[in-house]
Image (cartoon, rainbow, N blue to C red; front, side, top):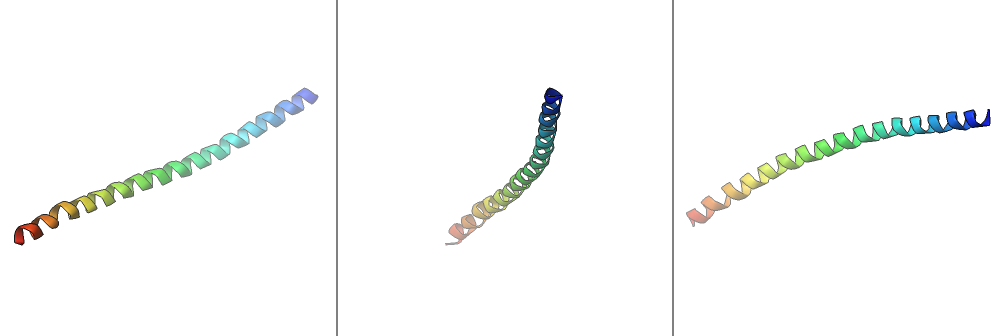
Length: 61
């Protein structure tokens, strides 16, 4: 009986850990995806501004 109780407690503990890890992995993956998406959009806009705007200003001078 003692071994069975300890086995059930450990299995329940691992199930709880797996469930919480799934939730955290989902949240972290969504955050990483949003950060990568926003950073890619931000880099594209800043690169366009840096490459397009200074060149005509230098040519006009």
